Length: 125
Image (tube, rainbow, N blue to C red; front, side, top):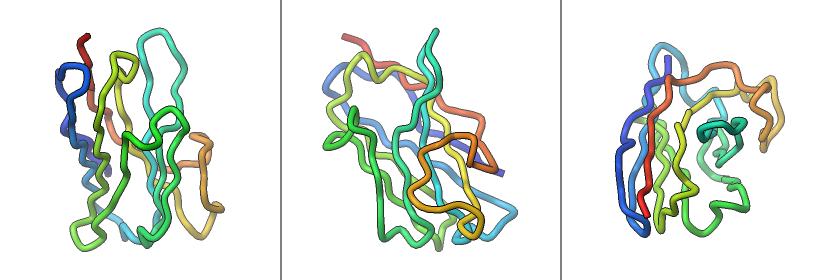
């Protein structure tokens, strides 16, 4: 089970830190990812991090502003969102992909096995 949290309302230029807590499974067995879905738009890839945390991949639209990280000891993944823009407004979802089943990086949402419930980020202009 994945539980995303940390969303909220923030002004443009502000920052937020999202968390994704995992339970019930071996966290380090999974590559982890963040996706987002804005109103009226399709879900899009944001960032992914390898099972060990050694390697990350960020979408071009967020590179340099967002940073994905994980703490396997705490079974938690994070997404630091800086320099937020109104177009970053979306529901952010975390997801897990079994590392023995998929390659890395995995940007395709269909390749992920488990999903969190989402946390809403709203950026005002």
